[in-house]
Amino acid sequence: MLSRRSILAGGAAALGAAPFPARAQTTPAAPPPTILRAERRSIDVNGKSASVYAIRQPDGTFGLTTEVGKPFSVRVENQIDKPTLIHWHGLTPPWRQDGVPGISGPPIPAGGSAEYDFPLRFGGTFWMHSHEGLQEQLLLTAPLIIHDERDRADEQEIVVMLSDFSFTPPEEIYANLRKSGSMAGMGKVKAGGMMMMSGMKAAKPAAPDLNDVKYDAFLANFRTLADPETVKVEPGGRVLLRIIAGSSMSNFHIDLGQLEGELIAVDGFAIEPIRARSFPVALAQRLDIRLELPTGPGAYPVLAQVEGERNRTGIVLVAGGAPVARISDAAEASSPALTLDLESALRAAKPLMPRKPDRVHTLNLTGEMAGYVWSINDVVWSPDVPPLPVSEGERVELVFVNQTPMPHPMHLHGHEFQVVEIDGDRFQGAVRDTVLVTPGRRVVVAFDANNPGLWALHCHLLYHLEAGMFTTIRYV
Ligand SMILES: [Cu+2]
Image (cartoon, rainbow, N blue to C red; front, side):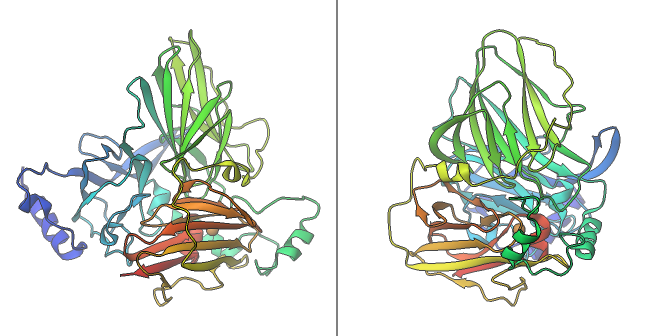
């Protein structure tokens, strides 16, 4: 049905959106695009109603599941009352379709729409989120799953998306951070002064500065442990957990309880499998974990505990109609900070072709705690900051040096990269799109400049990104 509203929306798209090819008009056989709506909705958080956003198809499906070989053919309809733009986190589209306002194109105005159409180079677990302002904090986020030859017919796929939630509006959270700084009472300490900081924290050794924001709840598939999602599974069955850390500011430890899992991919890319009962995941990262369930009935919580805190969230796998016990949303003890131990142990199943870098960019992760100023090489992002130069065809290495007391999950748009060095040790680490750089550490990633454009490169902590820990690379 073509309503006046949709005609107007089409007009708005023609004016406002980046120049996407009108594939449907030139290829008669092309199926219609999948519609994804950015919309308002209410959720219940521990008995209290909250107005948040969602990215859903008209039938209510959150996000998108597709497969390699099909084009990524999507129309985003903006049904919220503000401009928005959705970023396809981890995909490698043409740069104009990357969904970063002011970089890849203008936002979609309220009531407007925009079309996306590009080939999918690889499958795996990805996600989508608004890159406009602080909308991500209001859950304008969704899974983006791309099936490929790694998927098994006898395996039950279970997607778990993690979020952090506050009843305080994100603009207020940000204003409070700017007012009080990252470390209240620490005075004006330049973050570059790591030694001084360590000295001052001598009473609590190895305690990085974690979790700037005090959240009201942590969600798994938008629910808390007071009312968790329960998923029916087969006794003795196989499960593929696709865990998406879709949080704005929180890193997690995934706790499989009595089950041992096999980590087979990070950020969608296959690794040499690693078996464990617990895995760290930094925000914006994803973990693909295979499980083999015991025979017989049982209830198996899959929990995610916030780093450095007792707070946790999760879902419950239920086999054979086993009873589900209430799980507290507070663990008995605080979890440790995330480390680079797992990152150092990961090995890519398909590493990049070995090659000397043609270009190396060093990015010192910098900031001022007082005033909540975050930067790269002491430069706070503004549109006037010149992009880092890159040429097409080059092997590029990015050297992240964290000179602050906070961990930063660094994300490059439009490319997959490989972790090739941590603190001077070279290795064939994981291929991925987001890497955590913990305080005082040096992490080097390599990528092939094979997708020309203007690309964002930033810390994925939402309020760090907002405060200026953001830059771009350009080869157009
Ligand atoms: Cu950061």
